[in-house]
Length: 138
Image 1 (cartoon, rainbow, N blue to C red):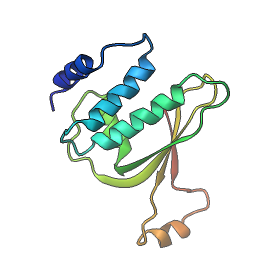
Image 2 (image 1 turned 90 degrees about the horizontal axis):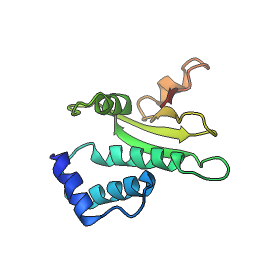
Image 3 (image 1 turned 90 degrees about the vertical axis):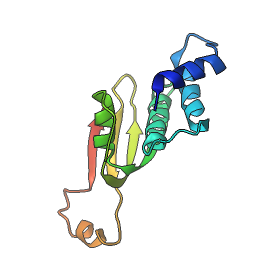
């Protein structure tokens, strides 16, 4: 995928309307969703970016919690992207990332693995201290 071409096409179709990055970032996500782009991970990454932007939106009171469904391991996928590398062969990992933000604190993401019928027994008999949820702060 040629990201420079996608960004240029976006700016051509959507000239800047404000000096706030949030509306333009959300519009760029919507623009990419409307394009016929071939990327196994794009929908998951866009859903995550939209949720993170929503958590950062200025508002009175706490931000509403956000949830993002992943089919692939989000730690590997997002970590690879954050390192500036193209993700390849990210293993499947059906899960949810639950996002929250309290005041000026950093975003907090909690990873909750999906319970499949074959693993339900294992989860039911795991130690009480192991909930299957892991905290991630961004």
